[in-house]
Image (tube, rainbow, N blue to C red):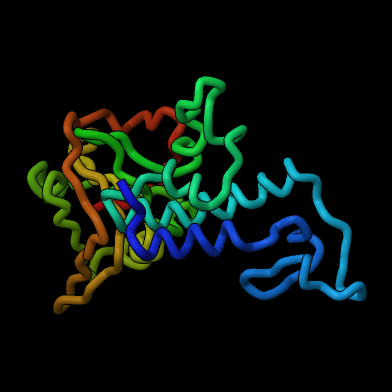
Length: 217
C-alpha cells in the first residue's frame, strides 16, 4: 500500500540527507557532503555505520507514524527511507523482521497496537481499581480525589504519555496511554490518548519483566 503523503515526505527527507558525518557536525536538513567546502569537511563514517544511524532515525519517525496511522507499513517506509536491503531483507528477498522489531508495540486482538511516541521516558503505571470495581478497570474510568492522602503521589506518577494498566483484584483488565489529568470539581479524571480493554485479563501481581509503579485508588 502506498505511503500517505506525510510518511512519503518524511521518508524522502531521511533518504536525501547525508548521514555519513552525523556524529561530527550539525547541519541543515537535506545536508550533502558534496556541497561542502573544504573547510567544512570532516571525517566520515563507513557505509555500514552510516546505515545504522539512518535506521535509528527511521525508527523514531516510524514510531510516530505507526501510532498515528493504522494503515502505516513500516517495511515500505524503511525502503523509501533508503535503508539497505542487508538490514531489511532476508537472502530470499522477504522482510527479515528487523524493521518491525524496532518499533515498540503491544500484542492485541487482530495484530499490534503501537506505543505512544515519547512513552518510553516514563515508567509504566499499574492502577489498582479495587475501590471502583472491575467495570471501571475494563472501561478505564480512573479518577483521583483531592482529599485522598496519596493524591500528590499518584498525580506525579500519571504524567502525559505514561503507559498504564488498570487492574482489579490483581488482574489487568485494561491498558492505555494517558493524555492528561482533567480537573472536574474536586476530582481529577484521566483523559486517555488511547485505551483498550484487554482480550484476556492477566495477573498483574507478577509483571514478568515489566516494571510498574503503583497507583492505589
